[in-house]
Image (tube, rainbow, N blue to C red; front, side, top):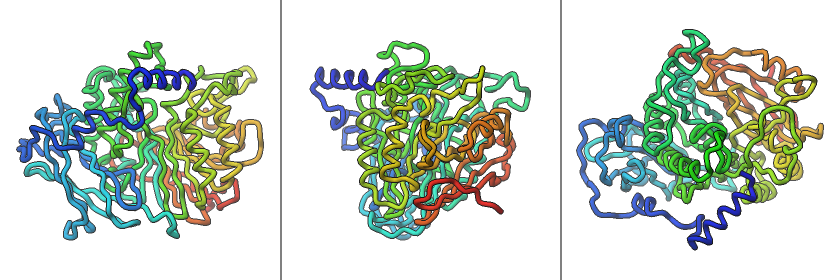
Length: 532
């Protein structure tokens, strides 16, 4: 769907109901956040209900949101829960032994929200580590660790974070998440594809590639469409102990890409030609399930088929992070292949008018040493291969939306050249590349695209496509078709990115290896590889 069509739809919906899509809180939110009748104050459980772990996210300088979801039997109907609201107690402490309690309170785990809990904590000290936990009845959760942001005017010497995503449970073990849990991080950015919507393939995702590709773990049932389907799929993924450890180790900023709903969806259009009203029904259920299972604030609660996901975080004077949404507002994508004239059309959008205006204003007013654009799909304009002498590009990336890309790069060049880094994913391979206009040669910023946690299995360092891309794209400095993540260490003077790989994802406990290390000097565009 084109951006203008979507705006027309929203205006029509607002005029029909006379309801603000941006400010109206649904009855589900009110039920979850306010007192109500029939709350079980002291429920009893046969099995500990905190099987899915705990998480924190969206930190600011005086707090963060903490999350859990009650599910004693996670893949059973309703997670094994009685369909009644239940009282959940939470504590936030200054020490892991919970001797110094900083805040405590209660929340209601509502059946309308899959018994998820999102407690937004305020009144904490800036730039400080905290530990949190939950209790329901006599059962207690494991504890998690989170951290508040520095004050906006603070001089921050370093920020360390990880870029990760694409974690098909059928494609391998979550060894990379176990390694991430052992990192000492300020935050984790998950770029999307947290779950995959596909049905159980029986023989694994790659039945023609031999026994090596047999499913590491099986999903349950058919392709997912209903709210219960999506909830069960999240539960299956979240049962993994390595993923739980990573969630509990640091605050997360999350984004969804396509597989949280359906492969290659865009706006209110799916890839199968489903009537938009039907697809919007599926999308609404998927967005609710996503909210239920992520450490998101109330401001991101899905309403009327939309979910406000673009937002920002400021790490003192060092770093402004902008978390973007390249799915809900994009125009329908074109078929992969040679660039058609449509990729240049000003009628096509990647971010939508409102999000683009917000981001442009943020960049124009940013006074930080660095800017991070954390988003879902490849931003660098890379030729993937040549066919009959013509360059071939993937249209699911910014290469299919060159008008939007040119506008954004012009804004970066004007206000933040040499101090902006794009973090992305989706491609199931590491990329480190300099970024320039598709019709220009001056380096404007850099991109680190993190490979998948598991998706596509073990992989190799270099396949034929990687070799071809390196030959065709001099601004592509490195690529690897292995699994892993990207670790960034940012100081006022330098941005260092470590491209980490796990050699095997079908073998438990596989070691972590450094593939390549790159760095940027503040204000000096152009990636440099660290030697030695």
